[in-house]
Length: 294
Image 1: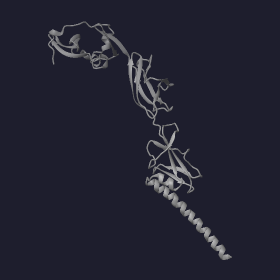
Image 2 (image 1 turned 135 degrees about the vertical axis):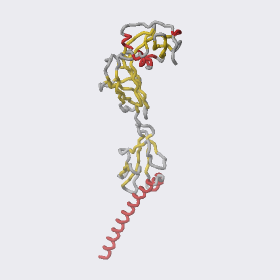
Image 3 (image 1 turned 180 degrees about the horizontal axis):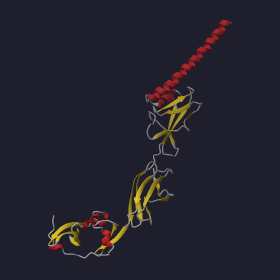
């Protein structure tokens, strides 16, 4: 009787040890298969299978069975909530080795879900231009997974104003003041991009005429600065000319080499606003008698 009991106990112990070995080898085989990037479908056939489900479109939850031979590591993320096994097995993602880990029953059936990554839109640049007391910002952005549906603008950390346009104008700003303008975009998934901020100095502008044509300039700008700035539209240049009384600095229209203004040499550094405020309209002068230096 005692011998039978001993044999029975020995059998139970052997069966228990065999189960441990089988389960260990099962888990080991899973890890080895995944680590070696072998086809997970082979594992499916041998162990009631792991079905890999990949989302087709970002954020929609439309999954389909994949036949990939390795776990996706780019443009996808492991869905912890949906990834489950039928008989209680547990699935997890090893981000270091980029593999799925499974612990549980040998005969379990598991479904591994991967979501397609949603790539956010990115603002690449914001360019500002000034017209009188108004500043217009133009946004250059790159869309991500979704399309850009709106642009949001803020000034001095105030509330954002939403617009469908990539250009927005802030009006009636104070001359001589500095403003912080922030921009972000929203995509079709309702996700926001990075916030891109620029600092804008609102310049004090003045108006003046050369003959019958109106121009703008920054208050305090010299003739030389104005000619080399965008305000002159690249229409003018200067030449130093010598006559009987000395050197003169000529302001010349490029299109027809017409002299529109003449100052004594060195006066090109004269502040433009000092002349403009006197409301002088520059008269045409014939420069043919001036032998000009190169």
